[in-house]
Length: 372
Image (cartoon, rainbow, N blue to C red; front, side, top):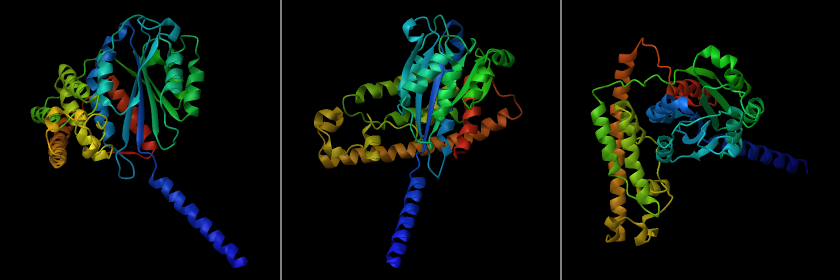
């Protein structure tokens, strides 16, 4: 009887160890990032910085690793303080829930306009905490960035209550005041960050994002355009999404060389995945099998192919994309070395993108991520 009890105890211990190891092995490698932007009249410069630096932020986060794996990146977008929004909603709007569809985030960001208004920071933080699809796992880095320039305590919703609720859910709130550091302190932006275990920063929202021109830029952008030829739209949303991809290339190019380069580099990262509409990504991720798709779900050029030809065609696109992505990443590593040498000793620009990266690197490391 005693021997049987010992055996049962040993089995229980072994099972606990196995489950413990499994929990470690299958920790969620995910970063969830919500950006809350003031879109009142004075914030055109802020929105411009967000558009210009979106892909740089994506690329820096794509370099993170934990347990040897790159995290899945999800981004959400809110706007607030815009008189064009409903007063009943507190002049705020969830532009996009947390999503891995980065082209859609770019599309929504470029669709923002400024107007008004009344900026209620407590309300928009509370809405983001309550309405976004946050993970319940403690392994996930969950971060909010709110940027604006009016007192943090405006409106009927207490920023203190919203910040405290965020902290209880494991969501860090970083505050970015558009103006002088001291003014942000006296208008409670620093207090808001402290209450949500985040970081307070100040920026000049009207500072122009500097382009660093390098010998590698033209080739990186060319290869980024070449990548588009490896995407094959499928399903009901396929063609519209492929058009959106090209439109976001054009939007990035309109913001300058640096933005266009960063956009091209982003398309070569694991964070840029489009399995919902691109057949190559869908097959690689196991979302669909080529043979399971009906003719009307395929692009015209694949409909007359035999099943074997269809599979060979998609496999060829996957291989070609991997090669182009490798070339982009090789060039980007050389570009990073060049830029580091060119900017050594210079003061960092006081911009939205710089503020986001400054805080998220520290907070990612606290969660065990290593940023290369």
